[in-house]
Image (tube, rainbow, N blue to C red; front, side, top):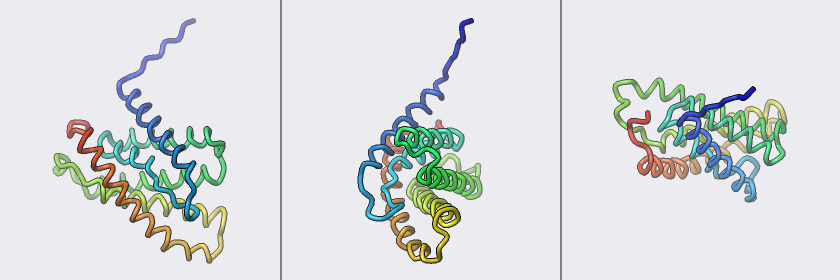
Length: 179
């Protein structure tokens, strides 16, 4: 019996975007971090780009593929690192979906939203999700909260950088008919 699988243009798009995000994530993981939990998060640029250009369903698939495949390749699957990455990714996408649906009404869909605001929101949500999981499951100590202002400051700064990069990608690659 011969199985026949067919792929769509959307499947190829998801695979390409996920491969790009995975590659960026793996390259980033090779660089030292100044503090635990602080990384540039450039792989999230791909997720945000995908969210703004192709919608939340494709962004969710790209994000989940990045987290799962990267963790398998780096040997961190089901480890604390995996759980932190997954929680940050899911919370940031969930918050983006909520904000996008509440504050970006149907009649404004003809305008391209600014990626910088979304990137800051995603970055702060991502670190918040990681912080909650770290505190609840791994380090339930009040002293951990002393790191929160530092983490949030870096989240905002790196969110601005990611937003600028994402906005440039959108301006170059994403047309309004892809929404």
